Image (cartoon, rainbow, N blue to C red; front, side, top):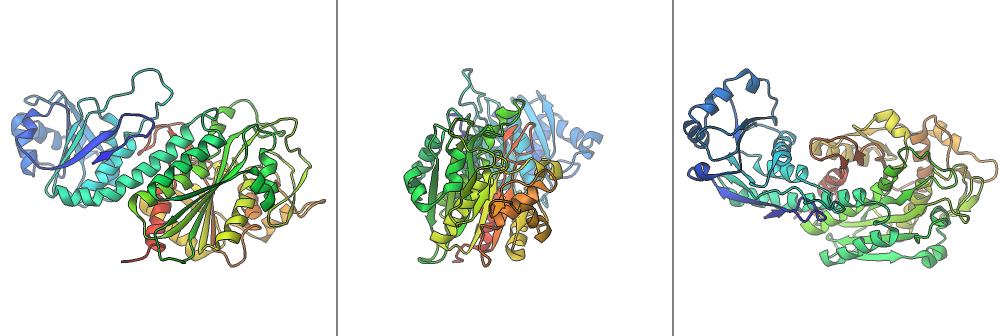
Amino acid sequence: MTLTASPQSNQPVALTFTATDLEALAGARGMIALLADGTTPASPAARRLDRMSRGMVTRALASADWAALKPGDAMMLAFPVGLAAEMLTLVNLPRKATAAQARKAGAGIGRALGPLGALIVAETHPQAAELSFGLALRAYDFNAHKTSAPKLRGPVALACAKPESVAATAAPMAALSEGIFFTRDLVNEPANILTTDDFAARLAAMQELGLEVEILEEPELKKLGMRALLGVGQGSESPSKVVVMQWKGGKPGEAPFALVGKGVCFDTGGISIKPAGGMEDMTMDMGGAAVVAGVMRTLALRGAKANVVGLVGLVENMPDGRAQRPGDVVRSMKGDTIEVINTDAEGRLVLADVLWYAQERFKPSGMVDLATLTGAIIVALGHENTGVFSNDDALCNAFLAAAQAEGEGAWRMPMGDGYDAKLKSRVADMVNSCGRDGGSITAAQFLRRFVKDDMPWIHLDIAGTALLKTDSTLAPKGATGWGVMALNRLIRDRFETKS
């Protein structure tokens, strides 16, 4: 089994599951990671390592430093006496550890993984597959545009009692990790590389996985009446597009679940131009579309028994002489007119048309949209949680449960008529921006106007969680892939056909 650290890195992490071989401990030159539980060496491998290292394991497990470790944390012992390995890592992972703790433990190993690789001694640990998943996620490295040699990572062998069973459990996690890597790669790409054309081509390539992919170009979007979306991109040389990805793994004819993503490949703010400081981060303003793409890739790779359609609106927001102006009025595909108060409130214009198109064409069973939509959500929730807005308690609660199970922070935000009233326009049916107060909520209220009354819907504002400037537990700084795990679990638990 190979868990690719990144499709762009050319440095995959080869991970194999093997039976525990006590003799292999002596010859291992890379890191040896031992999953330990308690204060004394309990397993055969732990006792063997203790004898070989002249009691180092016993002394470490009896130390105050070990006692202070939380589940998932590790103690690094460099150049252990009696061993060929350069590093002996003792991982505090009780047998009753949670999946999150196991992933954290694996991430620690992935972060420290070097060219000699690692031998992980899991033996009978029930969370061995989750540990391998965490290792893969943290070993990710986006180096597509660096001329220096990438960090080398040697092979990883995970020794356990039932390697075939662990490998079978890890297989869908490998599909999930590839979906997350795909999302991260898209978000990390610079805008001169990831144009709307390039983005669409990468999505079209997923037809090889069994997805049906259509690319709607500007002439067709004009015929459909997507003037709100087209208005955002009219100042750019990059053509606006809508890409539709269908996965038909469920019952024939059953209504699909819909995922809709904002794909602004670069956002200058348009005529309402952003400040120069930090504008380079707007390469990530297509993060919602990237998550949709990553989920669709995951579903195809693991053969999900569900019907799911992913739709992304791809545009670039530039201040050209043809660009949309503050004060312009555009008509959406739905037919509502919108007064453009701020051209930097562009993502909701893109989503408005794609949401309406998704409902008109596919009549889905439910709908989730994702967007790096507002700075206001970062002010409200920081970078720990995505803002969750919904018109349906059952669907929203199911998503929140899925996000919690996967360790992806999410917090439900309020909606209501008082916020909706702020959208009133003097010259059109609504405005696209209502000022700073409650900015993430009024943005959600705007989107709500393009969701039919009987349609279960969730809006996820991922502006604070799509990309981080510091390392997180499961990712280096940069793109996180937030949302792929939670949405994959939501679809698995709520929408897949049970065999």
